[in-house]
Image (cartoon, rainbow, N blue to C red; front, side, top):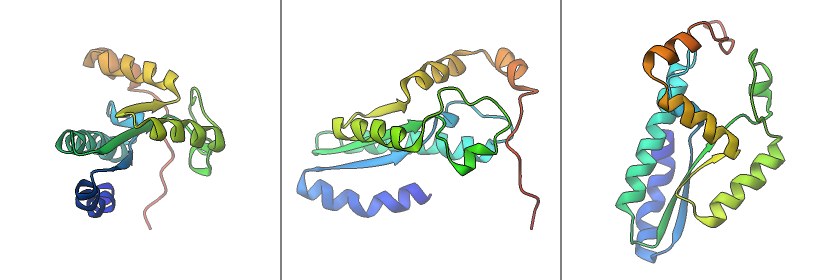
Length: 146
């Protein structure tokens, strides 16, 4: 809801002007339901679908909609993960790559591109194989309820 609330005020002014770029950050976590991250995966899947809808609605208006799906970026939030984080990027490297995607007005991009391959593989796995592979996968630590 936050993504929609943040971008929606800009839609009509950009459409009226016939120019602009709206950028939404989703995640490769939106490609499949990751164990221990159900709400996060669901919110990122929703962001991907909403941005896709918005992109189609604005087609031909001069307004671009860019969906960015980052993989792992080395931040305090990811440093607590107790599982492998393939292709992890330093924040400045991630920012440069994402800026290139935005400048090119690409409709959809996974950064780094190698995570797009991982995401494509995960999407194509049959449910039984995905369930077996991730049933015992390490989970992100959770904070105890306040």
